[in-house]
Structures are given as structure tokens and as C-alpha cells.
Amino acid sequence: MPRVNRAVELLSRGQPIYYGGAGELSYEKGVEASGRWEDYLCVEMEHGLFDLPGLRAFMTGLMDAGPTPTGHLTPCVIVTLPTNGTNEAVMRANAWMVKQVLAQGVHGILLCHAETPGAVRAFVEAARYPFQTQGVGDGLEVGQRGSGGQGFAACAWGLTVQEYVQRADVWPLNPEGELMLGLKIENRRALANVDESLTIPGIAFAEWGPGDMGMSFGYPDGHDPPYPPEMIAARAAVLKACKANGVAFLNGVTPDNVTDMIDEGVMVANATPDAAEIGKRYSGR
Image (cartoon, one colour):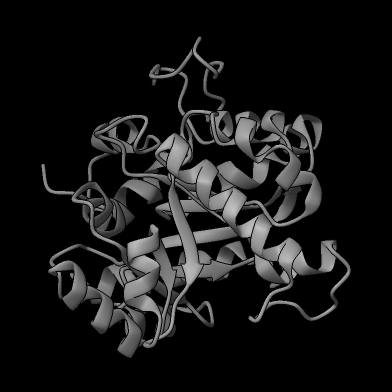
């Protein structure tokens, strides 16, 4: 069957993907966003409002205005959660956020401050139905997502409920899955555990979060280069762990550096339209 998730479709072909912020959550903004150029839209709920009614209205607008220029019913939508991945107990206590967000029909979730392997494991399990068994017993326990939230999500994906629950699994652990789970390895505690955290099955992409990573090293405003040596080393460690575990590395790009970033291994990029067009031409899209 054709892919629901445009971002997964591209990554599975070895193509870098480009994203931008979704902006305001409303039905009208969803209608406007249906034709956006990005491969996925990021809904920022880490510091923004945890606005589930707004997210549902936005997704409804995307559906009603669809399909997109690429033929998908909606663009891929990925949400950042307000909880931190401090440890397993914190993640399990906040797993309700995962199922509530997925019930709005989004295509992925990005966990901020993913500090421990236990938190990452709980995050993946919260996003999976218990009958989806790839990786169970090999780094994961049974999934924790329950029945009851799949009706609207199935509509948002243009599927029947039966089709949705089969395809709403984590990619690339399940090659037929359509959900993308990501991690922000964005402080010194997360960095210390990055090699082990990225061995947890079910993670599609990860980033090093320079703004928060900089704060963790004592730099109040270290988001943009040039970076001090310890931040350069932190980025290199996250990139290395991503490559070692088949996880796509996320980094911002500009028109001046996008081709070098692709050569380095960046597969998910926050980009301007100009930078994305240069990157697409470079990778043969």
C-alpha cells in the first residue's frame, strides 16, 4: 500500500528530509498548511501550549484541504512533548501524553531531554499496540497503547480503523510502520547515556539540541555556531551514536552548508525553502 507518512517514505529511500514549524493550531491554519513545501511539520508543545483541541482542529483542516501536492492525505506531522525523558518512572507517569497526541492522528513524536535508556524504552512502548511484537524481548517489553483512540486517527490517515491499528507502529523497527519517534539528546546527562539510549529499538531519528546542550555546558545562549569544543564533541558523539544504530541524525542546515551536512550524515534537517531545494537537488530528488 502507498505510504501514509511522507517522511518515512523518503527516509526509507535514503533521502534526507526537511521540516519547519507548523505554527498556530487551528482549522484554518490546517487548511493553509496542506500545501506546505516541507516533508514534515513540527508542532511545538514542549514550551508551547499542550493544545489537544487545537491539534485536532489543525489535523481536521489538513484532512479537509487534502490531498497534498505529493498525493498524501495530509503532510507528516510530528509533535514535541512537554514532558522530559528524565528516567523510566517519569516517562511512564507521562505516557498519557503519548496516547493522547497519537489519538489526534499525528505521524510522530519527539521526546525532549531523553536522558536514560529506561525513559526511551518506556517512550517506545507507550506508542505501540500490544499485538505489535517486533523487538519485544529484544530491548522492549509489550506495547502500552490501548484501544479507544484510533477512530479519529484512522480518519486522519485515510484508513479504516483496522488498517490504522496495523500500520500505526514504529518505523523502522517495523518496516511497514508509519510512526516516527525521535529523541532530543540535549543535555550532559542524556549525552552520557547516548550510546545505550540509541540501542533501544523503535527510534527513527535523534538530535543534539544545541540550545539546551549549550545551557547544560554553561552557555546561556549557545544555540548557534561557532560552538565551543565541548559542544562540538557533544554533537559528534550524538552523530556517531546515530550512525552506529541506524538512526537518522537531525541538524539545522543553511543554503551554504546543506550539501556538506548531507555528506556528513544529516538526514533530517530544519531548513529554509532555499536550503531544502539545494539539498533536494544534491540528493537527486
